[in-house]
Image (cartoon, rainbow, N blue to C red; front, side, top):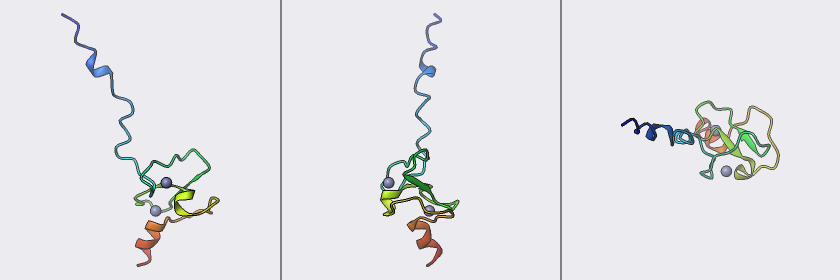
Length: 75
Ligand SMILES: [Zn+2]
Ligand SMILES: [Zn+2]
């Protein structure tokens, strides 16, 4: 009779990726690695980007604006 409490305990982890900002490549850029850079625009559609995806080899000095944001700001 008291056997129905299992369902709610599963599948609650790993569900916070839905609203995560993605790099231009469509993948999540891991902010904990040295190979990513954060865009200085708070409304950036990407947030963190892989350096290789924006064609730079080393981390730029902040504030850094990704190509998408530069495009929007300077049109
Ligand atoms: Zn990327
Ligand atoms: Zn940006």
